[in-house]
Length: 190
Image (cartoon, rainbow, N blue to C red; front, top):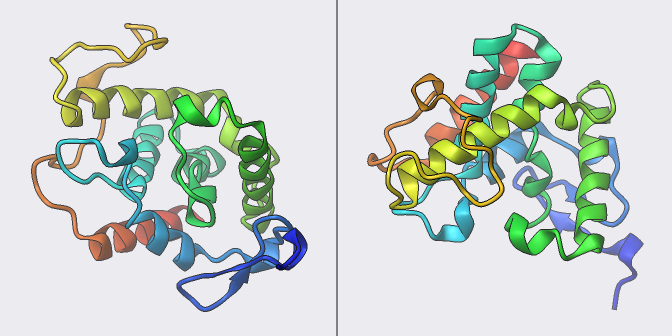
């Protein structure tokens, strides 16, 4: 059996990424875009598939309604980028698994470093607010919830649903189009 330091995943581009010993040199925007364009949100329990990539694009577009700050926009686009290298564990489960949180944090810090972003960019207040806004919008649009429903623990006034960039939730999303839009958003703000 390999040690944690020797354990790697092979990415879309053919790189080796070591999740227990991540390096900024192993991060690639194409790998991130490709993987996130295929990973579904809501653990697959939405009315139709909705990807982490689509969510990330929506967050970046929403941030642009608040600010033109490059770091904030990239922070929103890449706030779930660790999921390209690690599974998307639903938050209600993740909060009870501190080792997973630590691993995800470690990968996020490496991603920030790779892209020249300040440490804790993904924890900027505006990035967190927009992530919650998108979550709320997705809950209403994708989870067969009545308009105005609020996930447990979310303040009811945290969102203006009319202000959220929203793909057509009833239209099938092709992962290749999401990956292209993700890369376009990245390169337009890099």
